[in-house]
Image 1 (cartoon, rainbow, N blue to C red):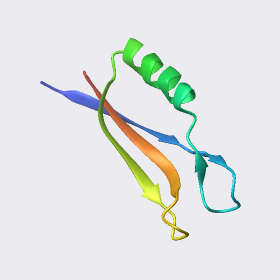
Image 2 (tube, rainbow, N blue to C red):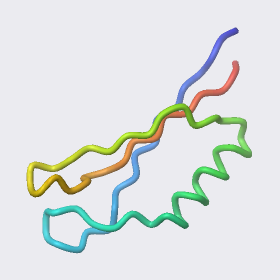
Image 3 (cartoon, helix red, strand yellow):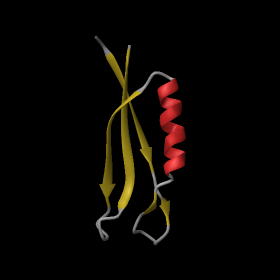
Image 4 (cartoon, rainbow, N blue to C red):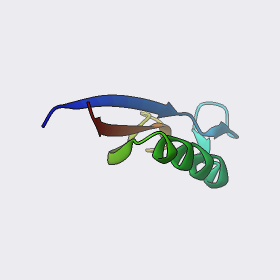
Length: 67
């Protein structure tokens, strides 16, 4: 089977200068459901930390679907 992949980067809302912020969970749900309706399956999710206090800089979502 052959696959195609898509990467989505989500940035949290900034609250404390460069410390990162809150992730809009409802907004992420909307994006996840939209991707699912297009046939994409979420296969991995990870966050990237800033050097300040371990705050999340952004979240990376990786999807795949059959070609």
